[in-house]
Structure formats: C-alpha cells, structure tokens
Image 1 (cartoon, rainbow, N blue to C red):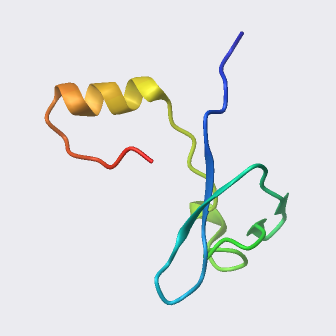
Image 2 (image 1 turned 135 degrees about the vertical axis):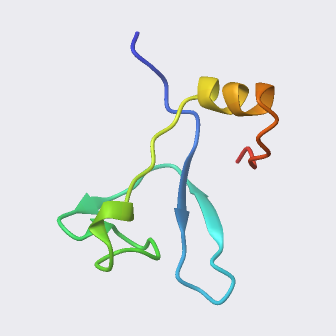
Image 3 (image 1 turned 90 degrees about the vertical axis):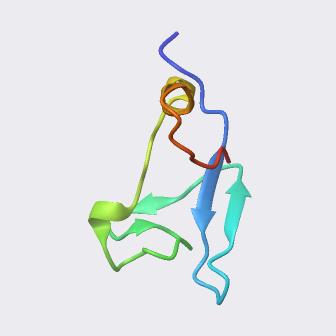
Length: 67
C-alpha cells in the first residue's frame, strides 16, 4: 500500500472562504471545480500532504491546523 486519502477539502469562494470537507474532487484543466482558485491560479490547485508532515511540524513546535 502506498497511502490512503484521509480527508479531501475545497475552499469555497464565498465571503468567509469556507473550507468544505468533500467525498471527491473534480479536476479539469482549470483546477479543482468549485474551489476558490478554480480558473485563477493553476499552481495553487492541489496540496497533498502526509500525516507524517503534521507530526514533524508538531515535533518542531510549528503550529499548523490539522484539518
């Protein structure tokens, strides 16, 4: 096994920039459909990280929010 997707989020383009937990994402040449960066900045479309990254940050006292 290479890995498991634990959670998927998109950030909606509303006044509060609401982060929404979704079951799937739809991606096309303009990015993630319904995400705030859709058709705006293709280089910021997808972030993939591991739980090990969160653990490493915590061990080094880097405060990040675990979604």
